[in-house]
Image (cartoon, each protein chain N blue to C red):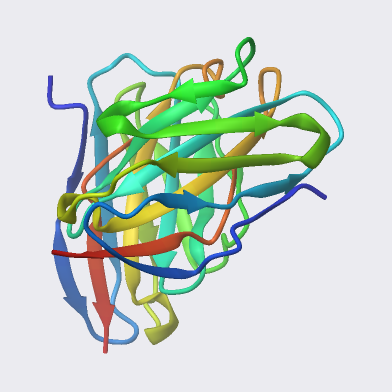
Length: 114
Length: 114
């Protein structure tokens, strides 16, 4: 099984450009998450989707939008990128809102905004 | 509000030294506890978890953690570290039950010198 797959792995944007990070999981998980990881700040939740058809804001949702396209896919969109959004983005999935609590992570997408 | 505190931000050890990384949380109810590891350039993966039962939990690669409820702590230990243990370690806590999110510590960076 591939687990959680994210694309692209690397991206450089100019300020104001838009882009979408794609995430897909093949574990039949109900819940999916987008985190950003910055040095010294740990993992911060951007948005999550507890189940297909629902999305909710996390700690740092400003400047982002998400779409839970179906049970497998959960995309993160930056409408107008800013340098403050330079980060490593991780997608994760889990059983229904963490019945076991264990998250399965993708390999990350490193985004640089110039 | 719930929070997770990892006391050591950066730890440097020599091979064969013993390791203990501290993790404390603030939440009075029943919790599920996790340690995740992120090897350089890789995604986060679960090292070990505690839900109930024996408070001494054994994980992968010789790691263990002890849940001390009275101290709100879940410290990670390894008797003898290896160079390959160089990684970032994250403690995470979830209030027990469905529909509860993980709260993350800021992480501890471990460097093991050969």
